[in-house]
Amino acid sequence: MFSQDAKKLADLFNNESSHRPIVSTTQFRKFYEEVLKLSEKGLGLNKEEFQTTILPLVKLLISKAHYVKSRGHCQEGFVVFFEMSIEKVNSLDELQNFQLFLESIIGFMPRK
Image (cartoon, rainbow, N blue to C red; front, side, top):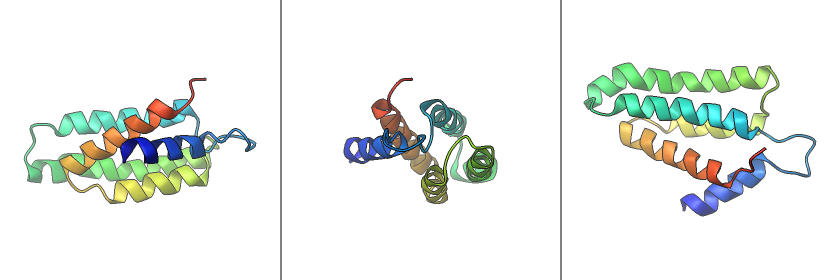
């Protein structure tokens, strides 16, 4: 699942036929690195600690995606993908799965 869906999203995000990509590889990596950092901070925390210390920061990433869009660094398609994905994250396991999915997408994105 990761490889097929990740490749489709990477192709969509960096569509060569469009005027500009939905999100650049560099910008995508910045969001991935934030997710990775939060995922690592969540290791060793119990469920309650995760819910009170890490999860609010995960949800804050939605507003950061909207901000990046308002600055012209990504398009609406990325914000929709990111927001829908983050809204589904409610546990450390789900955050780690999302982090791995983002990592899979990066693997299919072109280096520029």
